[in-house]
Amino acid sequence: MQRTRKGFTLIELLIVVVIIGILAAIAIPKFAETKRKAYITAMKSDLKNMVSSAEAWFSDNNTYVGYVAPAGSAGVALTFVGAATGWSGTAVHLNAAGATCLIGTGTATPATLAEGQPGGAACR
Image 1 (cartoon, rainbow, N blue to C red):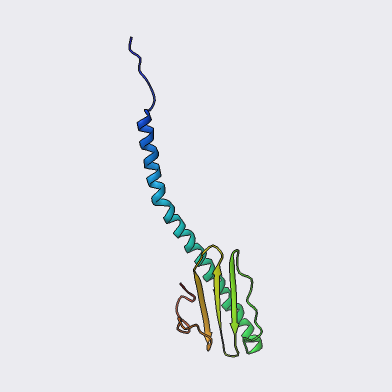
Image 2: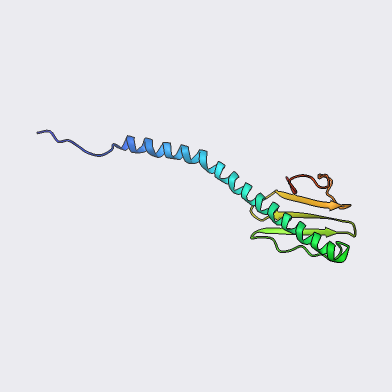
């Protein structure tokens, strides 16, 4: 009397688990880099919004002195340093350690940027 067994052997299951582990080891670092890019995009967006409101302030007051940086989006901290004829701003994200975005105009343009640099904020 012959019995046919249905199912997988332990070796076959072990091979599947190893293959899934290898694929996960490849995919997880790529996902982490994608999240970092999203955080940097949020910082750039907040800086561009700050540009609009700072220029509106200048239009009303003819100086950047007294302007206060708006609240950033979730996790983004904005700083603003204004002078009479220019300003600079920075953005950092709590979850993007080491990443900083800079933007500025006039006499306070950060050293790493040319004034009016295309693309707006520079991130490092």
